[in-house]
Length: 192
Image 1 (cartoon, rainbow, N blue to C red):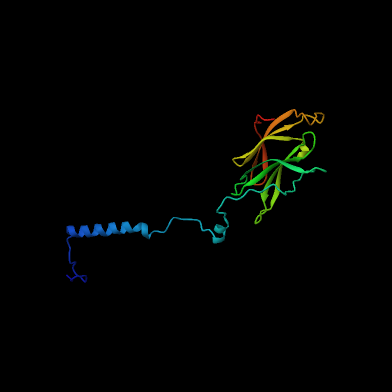
Image 2 (cartoon, rainbow, N blue to C red; image 1 turned 30 degrees about the vertical axis):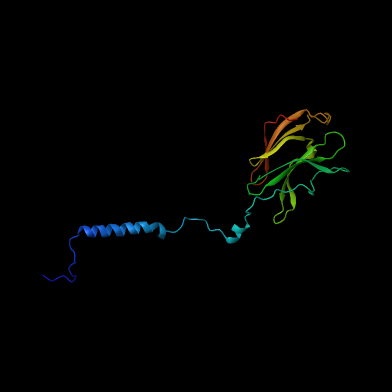
């Protein structure tokens, strides 16, 4: 028989001290695992994209000085109501304005317009018409809530109905679908 090339182990029989040393080494390795592991996974964001996000809430577009697409002749356009909210989910508020001509008599029809700000400026611009004044509607119970515009619309059953006395009442709700504002039927409010 040939002698072994590997020298005999110094301690062929484990003793309790060996078990304690092994347990201490394993516990130390387990304790270090959280320190040695990488941080939680995150999508890499370019520094420019992170810096471009506003830290304070954005200011909604103002209605002053806006050229609304309403024809008023010799009188000026008046913003009768306005409300703000983030309608498209981009984190910046839009302003929705109810506008009519400042007529000395009668009930001029309303137009409802969505305003946003030109990127990089404080200049507001009209991006959508929800109610066209040509439709001869008066807007009441108007609000912006939960990324939607709601209003009660007063109108006329025919051209023979005098503009002083609308005889049709309906409710409308508009929501952005990613491409355009979609109008839905909505229960009209109590106001007239």
